[in-house]
Amino acid sequence: MADAEDLLIRPLRDVISIGNAAVTNATLVPPQNSGSAHDVDPMTRAAYALVREGQRALNKVQLVWQDQVNKYGDSFREIMVQQGKTPRKCYYLNSTYLLIPTSSS
Image (cartoon, rainbow, N blue to C red):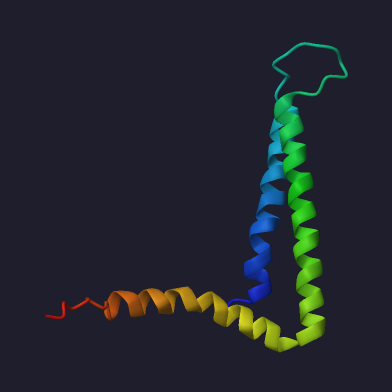
């Protein structure tokens, strides 16, 4: 079973990692507009924004996660894992036991 915290946080870490790669790529390519030296290429600006917002989201999620773990302990982790399984169970029940309305005459 995967750790619930890792499942929640991994996508945010992936965003930061991809953002860092975008920053590297954007700084390797010469800027499209040849304005003043103080102008930043829009691609570089967007890459830095991606990293900044990914880090901001990661920090917020980690704070909330840690607060809930401190408050509820391991039961919070277990509930998060169980909650992730709920949609699959609902889908199975809906597809297996599809209720067909009957007409009452």
